[in-house]
Each structure stands twice: as structure tokens, then as C-alpha cells.
Amino acid sequence: MVRLRQVSTVLGTFGVAAAIGFIMQNESITGSRYNADESALWASIDQAGVAQVASVNGVDVIGQSDLDRPAIVAAYSTQLDGTEMSIGRDCAIRSTASVQAAALVYLSVEAPCRPQTELTVHHQGMVFSAVTDTKGRVALEVPALAEDALFITAFESGEGAMATAHVPEFSDFHRVVLQWQGHREVGLHALENGAGYWQDGHVRAEAPRDAVVAMDGTGGFITRLGDASLKAGYQAEIYTLPLAQSDVRLTVEARVTERNCGHSIAVQAFQAGQTEGLERRLLNVTMPDCDFIGENLILKRMLTDI
Image (cartoon, rainbow, N blue to C red; front, side, top):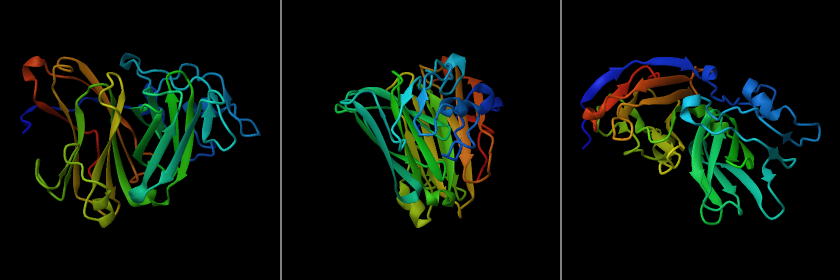
């Protein structure tokens, strides 16, 4: 069992995500309410509905210079329906999104000329990495973060695809998102109905549950996205709870490891489905030195209890 002795309780200094360049994708897919970062991406959509975006002027995916994040898609060529972007007649990249139970979206990407290749998925301000299989395919269940959900898939080369889905059940659920880059060893913890650590109501990545509990109205579940094997990949954890439920204490923890001891880490958290325009919070904190490997820090004030 993981030891829970707290090294310290970390308050840290938070910053509004926009101030550090986090891309905050708007809930509307019409483009009428996109923020300044996104408007650069869509500014050249002409009346025929064809996007020819030559550059995003170096806008970073998450944007903080010391995190070595790659630039967002540099060039796009899209079909009229907005669901296919191609890099050649025989190498078309396609993405589709279909709605599942509990406001989940089944996201599928096909890139036949990109086998075993890293890609990044952007969805309403959430970012995570994945790797295609030997046939260039990826299939994931992603919790929707907007009723009109937009998913952009980007390869490092600049090619990519996008897909949209209308998710009418989105407003029936709380969504709590924690995201980071690289091997940060952080995690989202939800303590339901007064539960303590390691008890039945303690929902976490090691005991995530699934969508059935949310559909039954008996609790929440955690979805983890991102390929943890990637050294600088983006990862995210999303806690989902029916909107009618409450009495959940939310915490973020960081474990001290050989890879992060004595180093600075940055994590971002935000919540959807509760308050319109809820501020996204970023925490930068220096981890304890390597004498404390195996211990956990509780990062306070990152989330609002439900």
C-alpha cells in the first residue's frame, strides 16, 4: 500500500490559464465565440467552408516555455464537413466522434500512413497524447467537456483531423479535469459521501470505476487519458459525477519519485458542468528532495469540492 504520510501541504501560486497560454476552446463550434488563440486557427475559413491555415504563429499547445511543449498544428487542409484532413490521396487522416452513455464520446482516428506515431488530441482546453497502432489507428472514450464538442487531432508534422459531436447529456454531469505533461506522478482523488482514503468511496486512477456507476446514480468514475510511456506526453484525468449528486471532496496529489524529486512540476485543473466560465488553475511547485521518494504531497486549492 502506498504510504500516505504527507511531506507537506502545498498551497502554491495559481495563475489563470489564459495568462500562460493554455488554449481554452469554446463550447460553440460555430467559431463565433472562440477566444483569441483559437481565432488565429480559424481566421482563414472562407465562405466555402475550407480552412487554409498556413501558421498559428508558434502558439503552444499549453504554452509554458519551460515545459517544452510543441507548437499546435502548423498547417491544415480540410474537407467541407470539417471531419477529414488529408496529407495525400492515399494517406488521408480521418477522425470521427460518436456519443456514448454518460456523455462520453467514442473518438476514432485513422491515419494509415502514420503507424505507431505520436499524436495530440485537443478538446475544449484539455490536451492529451496517444500513439497510433501498427495500422495507424487510435480509438478512445473521451468525456465530453461541452455540449457541442470539438476534437482536434494533431501530428507533430502538422497534419491532423477534427471531429465534432453533439452531446445533449453533457449538462447532466460534473466534470473535473486534471492535466499535466511528462512523468509528473500526479493524480486526482475524489472522496465520496464522507469516505476516507482507501475506502470504497475513494475514487482514483487505481480504483477508477466505470460509467455504469454514474448511469446508475450511485457515484462517479475517473477516466485517464494519455500515453504514460511517452517522456513528454500530455496526460489527463477526468472525474465524472452525476449533476444531481454531491458531497465529494476533491484533492490533487503528487508523489515524490526519482524522476521528479527536487524538480519543479506544473499541473492544471478545471471543472465543467457546474459554473459557467470557471477559472482554470495552474500550480507550479518544487518537489521535495530525493530523501522523500515515495511520499505524497497534497496540492491544495486546485479544485472546488462538489
